[in-house]
Image (cartoon, rainbow, N blue to C red):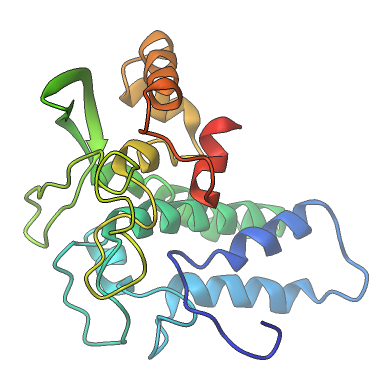
Length: 233
């Protein structure tokens, strides 16, 4: 992969690696001024082909504060899928930018990107339920598709788990709103503010019950893909 660009699966996640290196004080031979410019460009400048680099839908991200499922983007080209997983990943990417900006004493940028790191909440529908084989799981609140006009769409929270069309969320033009994982899985993807997620999901007891259900219900959770590593951790 050294000399060719693969397709981006979601956010501008090189930002995560760069920020991690910066926070670990890896400085030998590294120009962190240029490094910061790179992550800042990911957050602010949409490339013409965002299927290979950077982020798409940045106009919607900045103005609507989420990636709409029916996004209109005349500024670049890429697959208009994965609106849920792209939203939660962009939020985490912006948190990483906040961390680097804070370390470089760029207070205005740090404040800007910590606010943007909370945009995951705009894809969280607190009323959404989940049924499996016709039975209510009794858990409410999941990441869901959302349209340009602010209304909610629907993606079965189990879609793209081993229980339901497991391979239908791959990186194809007909993919769905999560990438290689279900809404059950991506609803847990808020590594930058787990405390806020715990509150959103009903508090510590309810959160633990939901996490246990995800890991123990047969077929709901697939451990063989990277998306599933964070819930285990």
